[in-house]
Every structure is written in C-alpha cells, then in structure tokens.
Image (tube, rainbow, N blue to C red; front, side, top):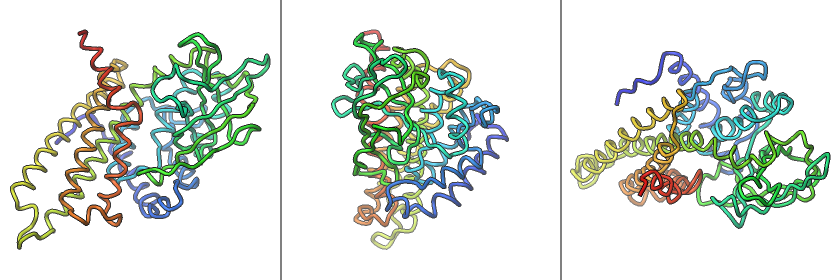
Amino acid sequence: MQRRIFEEEHNIFRESFRAFMQQEVVPRRDEFLEQGYVSKEVWKKSGDYGFLIPAAPENLGGLGINDFRYEQIMAEEMGLCGESGLLVYLHNTIVAPYFLKYASEALKEKYIPAAVRGESVLAIAMTEPDFGSNLAGMRTTAKDMGDHYLLNGSKIFISNGVIGDVFVVAARTSDQAKEAISLLVVEAGVEGFARGRKLKKMGMHSQDTAELVFDNVKVPKGNLIGEQGKGFYYLMSGLAEERAVVAIWNLATAVHAFEETLAYVKDRQVFDKPLGAYQNTQFTLAGLKAKLDIAQAYLDRLVEDINDGSVDSTDAATAKLICSELQGEVVDQCLQFFGGHGYMDEYPISRLYADARITRIFAGTSEVMKMIIGKSLDL
C-alpha cells in the first residue's frame, strides 16, 4: 500500500536507521538473546548516529526535531527486522518527554545530554508487584524530609531495568488520591538502590526486565520532576504517544512475520506443490494482508494527529488494541504454516510468536483499551 505521510528527509533517515540496525544489531542478535540484554556500546553508537532523543533541543545535544514521524520510522524499522531488545522507543518516546516537558532546566542539563549520547540509558519505574494499571494501589513512598525525599518501596517488570542508568520513579508523596503521586529521578548506584532479579520471560529475551528495590534512598528535592503531586497527570499526558509508538512496533513486527511466512510458503513443498499454491494459504494470507494495510492507514493518520497536536486518547487506545491483537493473530496463523518447524527456535517465527504475547499486556492491556474506548461511546 502506498503511504503518503513521509517526505524525502524521512526516507533518508529511514535508510540510515535501517543500515544501523542491519550492521550493529541484527548480526549480534544471538549474542544479545543469550546474555539477556543489548550491550551498552550499541546504545552509545545509537547516540553517535543521532538516533536518541532527536526531539531534545540543540543546546542539550539533540536535533530539535519535534516530528513524531522520526520515532515512527525507528519503531517500524525495529519491528521490520524483528528486533525486540533495543527499546529505543522507551528511551526516546516514553521516558525522555518527562524531562523535556516537565523537568527543571537543571535536571534537563544534568541528564538529557548523556541520554542523547547513549552514555546513559533511561527507564521508568512505575509498576509494583501488587498493582498493574491501577496507580491508586501504589505503595512506594517518598517521604518529605525537608531538603530531600526518603524513597522506599519496590518496582517490578521494569524494562531496561538491568542496563538502565537513570530511572523516573513514580512514588506516593501524600495520601490524597491522584494528588498522591510524584515523579522522582533516581540514578543507578546511589545508596539504597538495588536491582533485584533479572526476570525470566516467555519472550523478548534480549530485552532486559528486572525488579528494583529502594531502601531509604535519599533523593534531592531538585530531582523532583515538575510539581509534587502532579505525577499522575504527567503519566497520563504521555499515554497517547506511548500507545502509538508501541502500536507502530506491533504492526511492523506483524508485517515482518507476514513477510517471513510469505517467503516460506513459496518454497515449502507439500504434496508436490508449493504450500502457497493452496487456496487455504492464499485466503489466510490475503485476509491478514488486508488487515495489516488497514491498520497501517489508521496508524499513519494517528501520527499526523500527534504531529498537529490533535491526538485523541481514544484513537491511541484503538491503535494499541487493534495492532497488538493483530500482531498476535498474524504470528499465530503464520506459525501454523511452518508446521513443526515453526515451533523450533532456529526459525524466526518461533521467537516472533513468543515475543508477541506480552504486547496485549504492556502499555495497557487490551481490556483497559476496551474500557477507554467504551467510555467514549457515552452509553
């Protein structure tokens, strides 16, 4: 399907990022899968090429590019090569905006330049063992001690938890419902901070996920992002972009699985003719192709809305719901065409299948997305 949202500079950027992925990441995939994380030198090279936080202003080392299409291109290209370990979109699109939009100039100057260079990997610590989507259940506390906060609690399922250097930590600073949550910046290695288990997962084995523990961590008052008690609103303000970029990666990964399968069924011989020659194969793949194209058109329009400032949270939830569910459908039906080979790790479709299952959970479960969409129906 012809796409019309990109201009020549976007195409040049895509070629550059695709070359980077093919040269620096894809050839080392087995290494990263075995060690359970993408090595820090790859992050540093990402920064050297200008792929990290391009929205950061030039005085902080960035490119000053406020165009979501660049984030879209990177998420697409990661998906199109089956990459699930190098979470550039977490660093760029989910965490960095808390600094760029709400942090003091001092915090920006302290943390953003190193993050742009790839010398510092960003992460967000929000989820806790006893709650997921319900922020009201948060138990991590940051007690006001006058010149600092005393941070205590634990977090779980933290992406970039093993290799992360700077964490935006959501903590309770009062007992007043939504006004209870604040965002604090915590550096790895400070006294009282500890990384817990590196969590073993069904898929996404090259992406590190860990527990974090905060035991009487002294956080300077200057490390508060924005205003105390505004953390809930800050977290909600970035959800549309977060869900959009995740949906983009979901869809691109599904396209990658589809293309892998298309190549396979052309060569695979079943009863003396290619698997692709059977009507069942053609009808199944035709149905998936139609859904992929329609979802792509919706996503492109969503990106346009993000760029012009008119994005609607319901539209972002719709994109996240449709693209994550479609990714699951595509990898499941495509694996079926591989037969027993599809269940073997040596075939990429096996890894794509395992990687896809979490996408209907993170960035908001499919059920939460349906709740958001349902509220918009005014029933």
